[in-house]
Image (tube, rainbow, N blue to C red; front, side, top):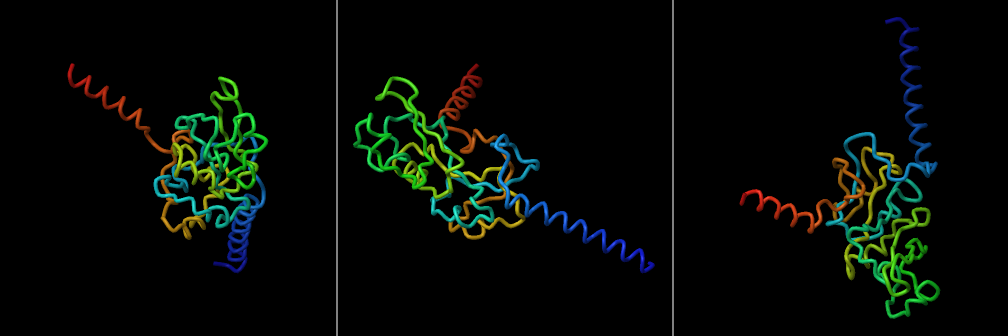
Length: 211
């Protein structure tokens, strides 16, 4: 092989390597397109948090190579009870409903858990959502909800924020091995099948067998 050809191949390899590193650095130091919220990953595998293993230790907040972390809290509306006072929202629930917004001591240090009236007035149903722009993945809301509430709040690795490292920095330090490299699945079904869905499916199978 001639010296000129070797130099050409070496230069091409360096150019490709620089492009890959540049693209990775760009994704680390720039934010996601706001219209890309919960966009599906391009590949079949993603880093994800197993909610049954996660103990909300707060390492996700600081271990991720992205800052703020690609991990965010979510509230599964299928499991939420739409309570007047939410364990993941305020620290003490013995606050008059009309004073929760103004005087309720927030569980989240960044006030990322948002509450809005849904139906039935101040003592009726309320919807709780997470403000992604404020959430840092500290896990405080999810920890309280899982210890005292319906377990509707938990942490996820956002597929549109994760840069898909070969070795996830969060997985490397997670004490419960809760971060897994696994097949992607719909974002609205993070906990898999729900008990109600399982019971209905079981009832359907029994009905079919009986017929």
